[in-house]
Length: 129
Image (cartoon, rainbow, N blue to C red):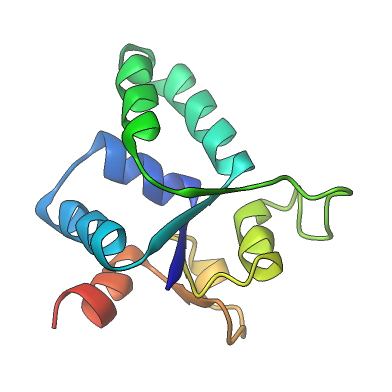
């Protein structure tokens, strides 16, 4: 499966490690394929510089050590771009299988593919059997 994590989920996983977050990332890296839109990488760097400036170098090293597919920015930007849904738009455009977000509005969308799950739901459905 190709799995896309939105920026807030990725930020939480990197800055606030936990047994669940580690398990989710281990499962993704060992069994599947992590996908990130270029916007997520940019948003993550900006959020860390703004809110956690002392962690900037650590986050940049972690990202450089991670194995993931970087999705290009669409030209021209799509309809969902700028509505806080750039990651969802990338998931739809690139045929991602699962989109993990903690945004309840995105989780409630009636979309069959990608499957849109919260981190907790992703863990229950795929990681913890």
